[in-house]
Image (cartoon, rainbow, N blue to C red; front, side):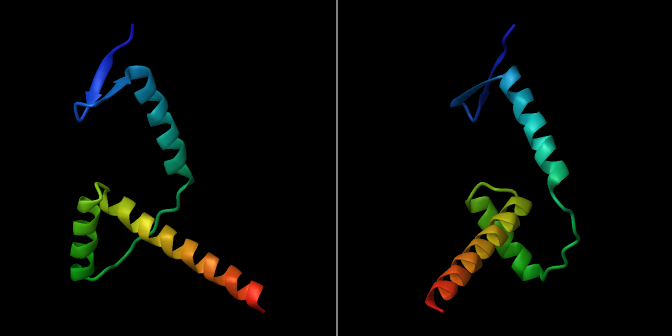
Length: 84
């Protein structure tokens, strides 16, 4: 028996696809490292506002910002190595 659910009224999902997504996200979560982050209140508020604008959780937004910074640094290092 297939159960259809609607997310935000547009995307149809079956119970089976949601279960598959949950299993994948659990696998991903177990592979991530956890750490405590102390952050200034104003920076936290700005990151939280930015996350809401982009429909992300605060944790997801911090991860996105860090991932982009690492990607830019890697690209910069590659360009420096080519120029040497």
